[in-house]
Image (cartoon, rainbow, N blue to C red; front, side, top):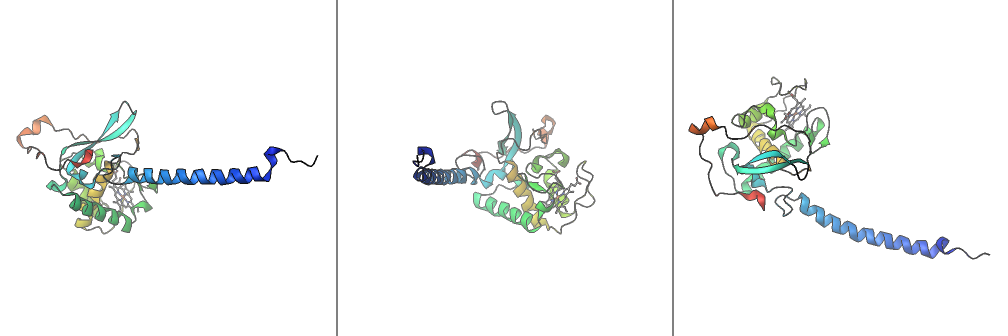
Length: 220
Ligand code: HEC
């Protein structure tokens, strides 16, 4: 009568615990390496683009197959009119990222959904319609970041304080925001209406032809 049922035996549960822990451990190692590829800039999964993607137009277009909006890398449209090498682009984007960290933008904003909800999410801010047109956007963004107090940017009704951002920091932050907008975030934020970046047919007289061939790094 004192015989324990097989399912209640101590050794069965000990062995199960060892196996479950072991298998989970191996699975987690696999997932860690798999994730690293998805979150590394310029990696082959293509989710996070190489930094030099800031040399190109970035749009956010509905993809019927995935049933969500996805970033689409367009023709060469360099930030502040200058095509950068991968190293230069990385240095600029990193400086922008450091600026957002040192000024604690996450105190009010979310970046890629992380942070606070006082101010808008900045993931696709580069593509925000409130910047007016793609021709004026870079200048407006730099001016806004350097002194946002008198510029009501959207209908939120709240104003952003002056954080003492220098022009150099503002430009780097714009580079960081442009790069971030190219990240494939599985459709986050959804139902986002991006700025119209198509080349207006009337502008053909003034528009310079897009430089060809140079870095089109995004699609590796
Ligand atoms: C104290 C809170 C606060 C901090 C800190 C803050 N912001 Fe803002 N930010 C706001 C508010 C509020 C708005 C909305 C302003 C408006 O609509 O006029 C805003 C708007 C913006 C916008 C326009 C967003 C859009 O709608 O596309 C950008 C870009 C931006 N902030 C960038 C930054 C960056 C970069 C930092 C850090 C360097 C930062 N903000 C720090 C409060 C803040």
